[in-house]
Image 1 (spheres, one colour):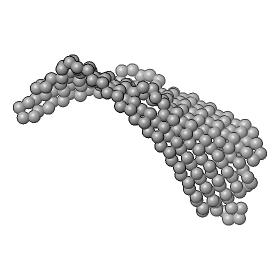
Image 2 (spheres, helix red, strand yellow):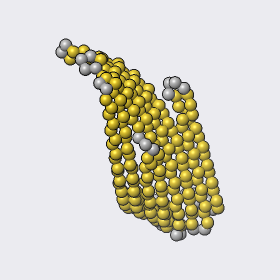
Image 3 (tube, helix red, strand yellow):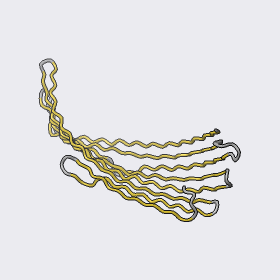
Length: 212
């Protein structure tokens, strides 16, 4: 949202390193592009950003439980992997009515794609022995967010620092998640399957007036 007449463009790209204790790799990336075009009293702007990230977590747990005369041991190893790729697009118009009045319209869309994988191997010995492998994951399901805003600003030509601002914001968010758990019991021998689906929808509207 620059006030410089003409066409302006800026771009950036970056990468980050991750360490999962087994190897070091470039698991984080980001990029952005900003366009701005000003002609007379109208300013157009457009921006896009992309981010990609991933991380891995390894854990080991060894536990001894003692209850009355019963002693059991739990040995568990797990590996958790998560990946995400959020994207953002924003566009809008600034209209400079005169030197003291400005009105802006802005629209945005955010899309986030993420998924995770979690593998667990668990062995319990004692009075109740159990040994199983667990594999849980969620499919690559996107999250969508739409938003829009209207902003008005008045600056007093006679009183320094006196301003009137009116802001209205609307957001519509949709998130659909599914988590799947698959367990393969070796002791005792049986299989377990569970699928959990969560569907969240939310709308937010805010309005604010400030006069200073």
